[in-house]
Length: 401
Ligand SMILES: NC(=O)c1ccc[n+]([C@@H]2O[C@H](COP(=O)([O-])OP(=O)(O)OC[C@H]3O[C@@H](n4cnc5c(N)ncnc54)[C@H](O)[C@@H]3O)[C@@H](O)[C@H]2O)c1
Image 1 (cartoon, rainbow, N blue to C red):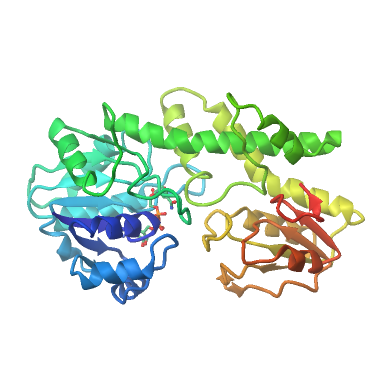
Image 2: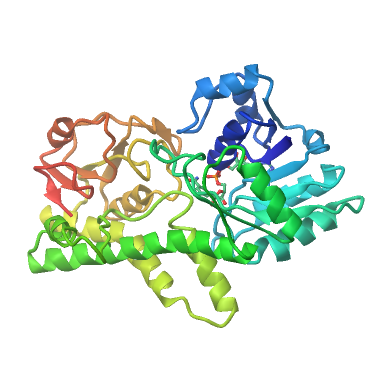
C-alpha cells in the first residue's frame, strides 16, 4: 500500500520505519532539517536505529519529504503530529489542524485517514473529518479511523510488533481497512466499538500513570515528614502479589504524554459538566514537586541558596533518552534561580538544551539528581558536590527524596 505519515517525530518515524517493511512509505514533515537528515539515513529518534532507516531507504520503501504534493495518491494517511497544551493548559489542536489542511489541500482520491496523535474523544469524528473536508478542493469519500500510539521511546521489550494496538473506524469499512493495514506489522490488534472508546482509553492509560505518580509523590512528602523511608515502604507494599502496582517518586512528570494527556481528558470532562478533580489535583502535586525538592535542599543547606553553585544532574525527562519536553528539571532550575542559586546542569545524553551545553560533573556546592542516565556513574555524581540530593533512588549515599 502507499502510505503517507504526517509528522516524522517519535511516533511518525517509528511507524514509518515499521510500515516500510511491507508498504511504500512517504514520511512528510515541515521540518526541512529533519527531512534532509532522514534521507541521509540519520535517525533523530531513540528507538529508531539509523541502520533500519538506511535499509528502508535503500529498499526503496521509505522517502522523507517536505513536498506536500507527494501526499496526493496515498491509500492511507497516518497523522502523527504534536498535541500539546496551550498557555492555559488546555488542548491545543493547532498541529492537528495544520495536518488536516495539508491533507485536505493535497490528497487526491479517496483514502483511509488514521489519527495516531493523542487527543480527546470525538477528535476524529468532530474535528479531523470536518477540517479535512473543509480544506479539500474536491469532494472525496475518505474513510476515517483512530489507532492511538503507545510507543515508549527508549524501550526495547515492546515495539510496534508486540504492543497491543487499539483501533476503530468511523464506519465498518474504515475499521476493516485499519485492521488490514496494522495487521501487516502488528501481532496484536484490539478492535473497539467506536473511535471515542479508543481515544478515551489512550487518555486514561496516561491519566492512570499521572495520578499514581502524583499519589506516590505525595507519599514521599508524607514519609519524609514521618521519618519513614518512602522507597523501602514501596518495596514492602510491592511484595503484595495482587491489587498493588508500584510507582516511584520523582521530581515530577515529563515528556509529551503524562503531563499533557490527562488535561485533554479533564477539558472534555469539564465541557461535559464533570469536574476532573483527580486529574487537576495530580497535576498540581506533580508540578509542585520541584518546589518541594528545592525547599528540602534549601533547608538542608542552612536555609539559603543565595550564591550557591548548584548542579542539576540529568535534565532529560527520563533515563537514557535525550528528550527534554516538559522536563521537571526546568521547573527545578527556575525554583533554584529564584532563590539566588547559580545553576548549571550536566546531561551527556541531552548535550545541549535551551542554548546551553552540558556542564562538567563537579565543582558544585550542591548537586540535585533529577534523572540518572546509565552512562553517568554514581561515584562521579557523589564526588560532584559535598551535598547531593537524589530524586531518583539510584544514587545511594546521597540525601534521598
Ligand atoms: N512521544 C511519545 O512517546 C508518544 C507516545 C504515544 C503517543 N504520542 C502522541 O503522538 C503524537 C505525536 O507525538 P511525537 O512525540 O511523535 O511528536 P514529535 O514532536 O516528536 O513529532 C511531531 C512531528 O510532527 C511535525 N509536524 C507538526 N505539524 C506538522 C504538519 N502539519 N505537517 C507535517 N509535520 C508536522 C513536527 O515537525 C515534528 O517533527 C502526539 O499526539 C503525542 O501525544 C507520543
